Length: 371
Image (cartoon, rainbow, N blue to C red):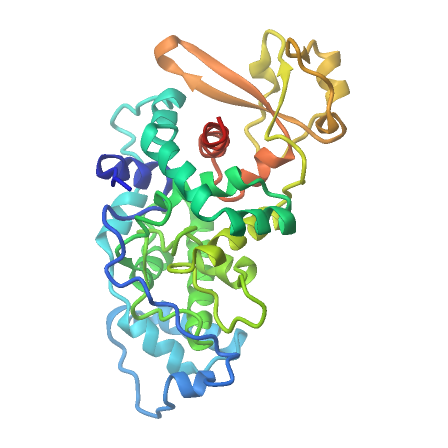
């Protein structure tokens, strides 16, 4: 499959997930699960009483306090927590790519057409069709278990990593520690808190033997594997494809990745049988119906009362029984805005990446994969 190198910087900036332009140099990095009969956390890492020096990030009193808190709250050996944090290195790329725009410089307007063209394009469409054919059985299993259509799962993987070709080449320990303690926007304490929670989950996964945090590569934001899961997503929603499987491998086992994407979407509100968008023709002034949120707050009777009607040739479906939301997709070159009526499944996609553009690109690529 050809490698679309020219698209990857755009991916990194727009999604905040993909952080590389080349495949992982050493993809087999997820260690056997700590629940394996062959290994336990103490066997994976030999116990040591050697003192951990306060070097690197651990030289900061705030990080030392954080290490103690994580050890206590997660019931982890303090030395193991401190040892990982002492190895973390500041990652300038993470700071640069997460920095807010310079307020003194004009900001380019959001452009749905430009964003869409980065993902709904021949390389991803042709690659996605081949991916669906090659992994037909796993995609069908995910659809049966979780109600997520095969083309939706394939589209997410296509947008995230070009079907597993580009998973990131930054050490996630460095990326997440950097963003946990040096997040470049002081006005976003919520992001600092989020990355500190992700770091705690990474440390816990490392101790359990599920991720080797000293070697694991990923994006500049710390996302990992074929589906670009963050540590918390691995901990909560990653699933194994085989009964009794001792480890979940999101980097080399495509079946695990496919099922994990399906499980994530189901746990975040995906409803089997619903389309992503409802076939609705919105009234003039549809922009007033957009609240910018990530939860649908309207319904079909309400929209109809405001002047919405079914699109030509469309019929009412089960979507009309669920909450709906109107989303906006700016087209500045045409000096207009495209509006669509989104179902709960659209908003489930935004839980993967909190962006109307992202969720719509996934839906449009998914549609292209079955044309």
